[in-house]
Length: 538
Image (cartoon, rainbow, N blue to C red; front, top):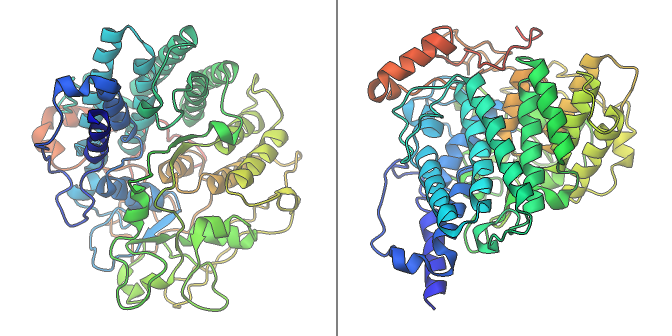
């Protein structure tokens, strides 16, 4: 009985603060938290620490997930558009205030929670003589912190204290990535050395203690990071990509990395996308977050059968089954019509996806087609085809054969049903069918476009790809919605998140050193991170 009670309490401890109106940074204590003696039973301490770690990748805290994914990665990556007409300062308008810009760096739900629980896992691993939990914890750490560094560039990392305090010196993004590779290599080596080590399924809602699947995810994550730095350090990129493939990567949807914690609790993106839903009628599409016009234009133009899996039909009526909202606009133009646009189709119990097999296939396709990397294990065409097929399978969209044979369809032009925010230009001339005779640039656009569609809701990954490659081609910010004061280019969009103002108070010397040493003295939305150096994007 005590074990059951402890597990119930564990779930309550992981998921706190689901109200958008509260102070999401407030730290609360639970007077009913079990003591050390109780937690030692049934591996509760390990299970609690591991699940708290996992909740730091895509945060289980609703308000945190809203800021990092619904209002940052989602809009910047062309997936979501924020629709609350009462917001005057947003990331989408490039004029966000501290309570928006600080979340990845300063929220107690991310870095402090990550590092304190990492320390707990390390102690438990030492006490039990089982190195496997710590190896898996390192993989989770990299998965979580890669999102942070890709948002800001240089970040506190190697010198973060055991308590997760971030009032420490910054590492360059190059050094952070090098440490990522080291940590992933160490983790994989440990897991390969201990194939029979046990990890309770209740401590692992990703792979239920399956060591071989964790190895595949670690190598797949390594491949993702290797391709991220391809324009910054091509030699290292190829080496790490080759190592990842040799070690074994995700090739089937059964091995997708996704946190399956949401049974009695609710997927945070479900709640976050529905904040402030319209109350004057039976609203079906959601609240503060709706689907962006960008991805719907592509998928409408391609007549993509995954639309019904991704989107909630709009409320605009006949002829407007799926219609998105243009990002980075003056939201006052939405008036009372915001609810009419398509919503995000996510259920309460859906897992949170970290990485899927389709993405891995597209990474391999790009490595071969664009950069001519050796050791990828196949042809670009085969990987491209496999990526699309795996995505169709993942979403239960039927056969991809006809879709892959389509050499004609192109993204649709955006016609806003309200008549206020239309964009009359063709976003892209890219079609679906593979053509081996295309140039590397065309191949890259085709691969990244399909990867983007397949990675639906992984907004921060989409934003990183857009910055790295320039693809997919997204609708530019409306001049009236670009409130950066001329800092952000409408076409290029935000290249990074500025450090929050509070950092210049609480960690002044270190952040100023980071800006001067690693960001050429400019801390704004237009400043490029280390790996954002593609010479074709200027």
